[in-house]
Length: 313
Image 1 (cartoon, helix red, strand yellow):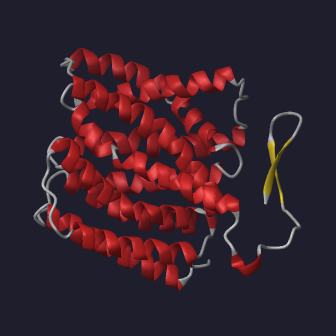
Image 2 (spheres, one colour):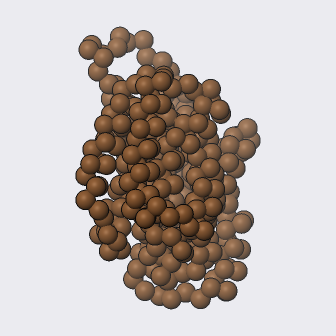
Image 3 (tube, helix red, strand yellow):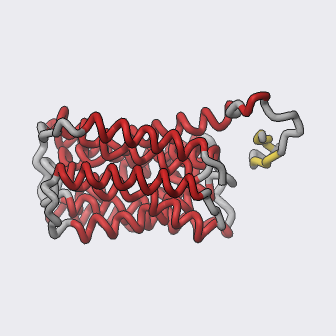
C-alpha cells in the first residue's frame, strides 16, 4: 500500500498490485511503522519522571496548562509554516475526542495522581493501557484480533502489573482513581487518533487537537499561574519542556504514524514495555529503587510483544 498526494495536497490511499514479498517478509512500511510507534513509547516512558520534575517548579494545574500551551505553540507554528488547511468538519468530532483524552484528560489526571504517587506506582496504568486501547479499537473500528493476540496481550499485561504492583508494595492509593480514569480517556484518545491518522498525517492529528484546545488552555494557564507561584529551578523547567515537546507533541506524532501503519492493537502492545522503561528512568532520574525482578519481567514482556506482532487479526 502506498500514499499518493493529490494536487490539492490531500492524501489518497492506493493499493499496490505488486506481489507480496516472498517468504512472508514484513513490508518496509510496517517495519517503519513499528519503529515509529516504538519511538513514541520511548518518549511516553519519560512522561511520568518528567512530570515529577515539573512538579518541583510548577503547581499541578499550571503544569498541565503550560505544557498544553507550549505544545500547541509548536504545533501551530508547524501548521502555519506549511500552510495546512483546517480539517474537514466531519473530522472535528474525532479531534475533540483526541483533545479530551490525550491533550487534556490524561495529562491532568496523571499529574494530579503524581502529587501523591511514585512514578513506579503510576506505571501500573501504563501496563493496562495496551489492553484498554485494543478494547476501544475493537468497539470503535470493528477490529477483532486473534485469540493468540489476546492471550499474549493478557500475559504481557499480567507480567507488567505483577511487577509494577510489587514495586509499589501492592498498596492502592488515593491516586488510583485518577490513574484508572486516565487509562480510559487516554485509550479513547489513542483509538480515535489512530483512526484519524489513516486519513490525515499523524502530526496534524495531534497538532489540530492541541490548537483547538487553546481557547481553554490559555485562560487556564493564566488563572493557574496566578494561584500557583512558579519556583524556578532546572528540574522544573526541563520537566515542563519535555512533557510539552516530547510527550505532548513529538511523541504523539510518531505514535499516531506508527498506529496508522501497523494497526492500533499491534502498535498498542508495544506499550507493554513502557512501564519497565519508566521504571528505569525513575531510577536514573529520580533515584527510585528498582528490584532484581526487572530483567525477568522485561524478558517476559519482550516475548509477549513478539507474539502480538506476529499474530494476525
